[in-house]
Image (tube, rainbow, N blue to C red; front, top):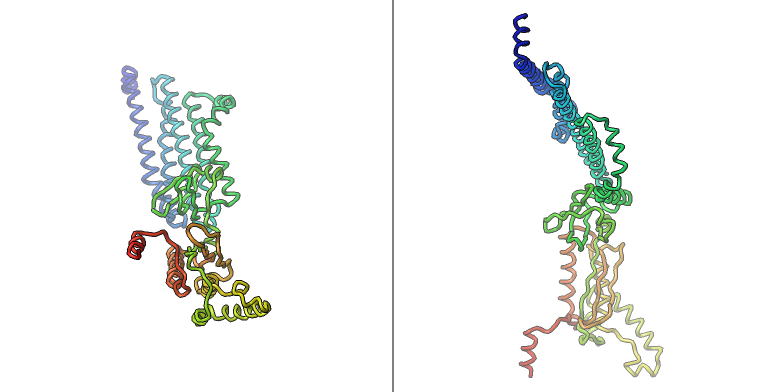
Length: 408
């Protein structure tokens, strides 16, 4: 032992290197025992609980992250025991090890917050009140505090000195983090007013977004468009700009049909007696024609001699009868909601003809079914219009001009 002490006194560098090797071996052994022994025991115990079997919990590796603290603590505590090291070097090593411990703890807390957010997301009401933005704010605060503590540790000064200087930097910080602050305020407003939820169909033409909301985070709202592309909308844009949310349509259970048939105005005329008799065979028109015939007979009967002039009498028109047929057809349609608005109306005529607009709601909001119902209705009406001697208006095409030349 005396010889060892005498050798160490003669060769201090060797003694220092020996102590450093021992310190590194002890830290390596501590890391091995914690990760290979202690963590396996903890993992085995947690696997017997529902939380330990949770896939999201295990994916974050919170305990594994915190286990990295052990070798850093060993080095921070043992570096002062190594002889012949300059005090400045000891201070630097201790400060770096302590800074690593602070960073590791901050990362562990952030991972724990991710676990909490993942578990919360499974709740049925999670789409109504997403908390991902708030989690991100908390994580930013944690990393900001960790950064201050790490800097204070590395320069071996009190963190209060750094915090006292932040007051003068408040204006600069506001400029630097203005997007974060605006996004936070917008996120709170969206959450409190229930403007947007995950799963909502929103439409924002100014940003080429039209699809389902898949994620609401601190800065952006992710929308999967119907062409399977992804749009990222700055969350504050949902507060400052207009957009359409189709959630009300989905929750009502009915989707609106608002489309017009454009009639050639030159095909509109009064109906003759034979035509009325023919149309009376239509199931959807029988009640209407009987009621209308009684009403018109009473009206015209009160005219006396004036009824001899056809212009003074009221008569059925093919367009009015067609409009009555369309309304009765929709009221009898099994896929049309009868408890919601149902209209068949004339709009202002123009260069495209006379619009007969159908305004009603289907009993489904599924896109494919909605389009099929709408197409079936208009297929039927377009095919039936010749029965009323009505024509659809369309701009003349090459075949029309060819027929005109042949006629002349």
